[in-house]
Amino acid sequence: MSNAMMAWNPEVASARDAGTPIVALESSVLAQGLPAPANREAYRLMCAGVRSVGAVPAVTATVGGKAVVGLDGEALERFLSVGAMKASARDLGYAIASGRDGSTTVAGALAIATMAGLDVFATGGIGGVHRAALGEPSFDESADLLELSRSSVVVVCAGAKSILDLAATLERLDSYGVAVIGYRTEEFPGFFTASTGLPVSATANSATEIARAFLAGRQLGRPSAVLVVQPPPTGAALDPRLVERAVRVALAAAATGPNRPRGAAVTPFLLAAVERATGGQSLATNLALLESNARLAGEIAVALAAENTRRPLGSRPR
Ligand code: PSU
Ligand code: MN
Image: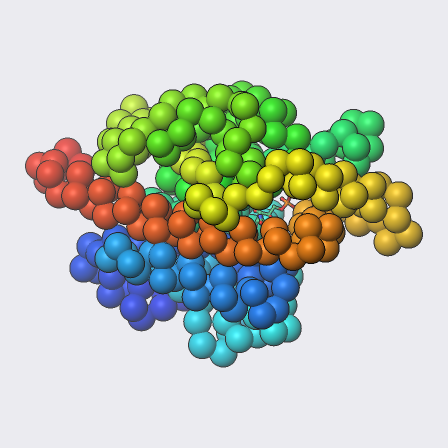
């Protein structure tokens, strides 16, 4: 916690010292995932969602040679208007050593959350196994999956992005020992859509249930994340046929276009192409689910704090 490479936002540091629940957030969605001005709205909604239940938001990033816990002020403005380098877990060392602005993906944010001792993280959708349409086979799998396998953190999301091979992504989560808990659902949601027909590994109906499952896993010494999934809020979910059409258009552009993206550029490229192909509808869905995931993460952080204080001192995990 007193790591010299970490820069704590004063509000987040006070929350940490007071035992107030904190929710870590990513910044790639602000710098790469969403266009301006929707990225500013995303920041506002994610923070408001966490705060609405009495927790404190902490957007993770790298700035000025440090891992930031609670991005705000001038640095945040740069992320929103100029952008930043996309920082997955492997990129953190370089980003910090070179003093560059780094926007954390899920993997990057999990690494910083772990360093900071934060137990709960919220995002829109995790990265995963890309569809074979990107190449036969694509061999493109997000580092989010591996980092989920070795980060003892509750991760709240709306599933994996619709641009991915969701069945293959679920199989990989299974191989990596990551529990996939559906919040009030038995189905893995499709990010822009509520339903995929794919089963989760367990279902929970309350934040307390999730907190207890996470703590029990940790006490057993499990090293992996608990992935909590919930569909986009009712009314915000898109028609699966519209999404599938848009994803196919996006994939075709990614596989054949003159500006064919590679590596880290693939996901931002596909997200932008889907947004165009849905006439901007996917943007509204994205914002709505970011807020609702942040709120659920806040509830879980509050429930975790309550569980921890219920235990006698000395028997607390960590
Ligand atoms: N989902 C979104 N927008 C995003 C992302 C996910 O709707 O910007 C980002 C997340 O930060 C996720 C990353 O961790 O994309 C995955 O990128 P890659 O596939 O290159 O690992
Ligand atoms: Mn990739």
